[in-house]
Image (cartoon, rainbow, N blue to C red; front, side, top):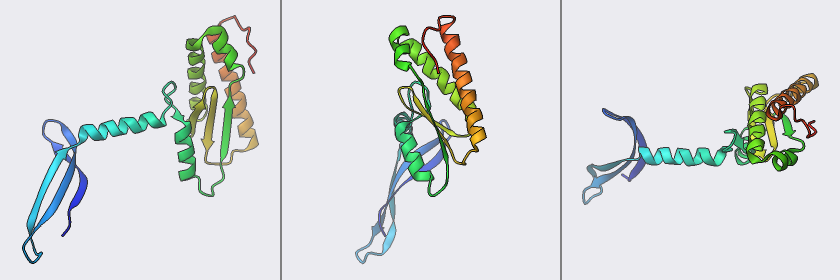
Length: 176
């Protein structure tokens, strides 16, 4: 006895699954008894895809394809509850000097290398680029200090290898 508005996924013989925006409203007689319904459906597949793209862009760092600061804070607020967790914060030292001495394309390559190291080190965790040269890994469990030390050393070693590869033998910027 009221108008309904909803989304429905249906199979289209030529396009596969499509999204429809559906509006249905009752047809009532003079005593408000239902006689039937009238409906309207509109293909909103493209609109839904565009909304998904916009949402993904709002939550993702464009350079690294890691989640961004906004997504990280929303994710932590929605999922943490009272659970204990470990946050591993990573800040690349002397990054401004890298950009100043070698240019932003070189700095971008360094950021991409660091992002790959972190994704490899924390394959099952949320790894986020907070901005600039800052990253964070969100671990649901409280990691043992030994595991944290091992992961930290592995990150340091791998990022040093990435930096060395990028810079070749010209290692005139202190890394640490």
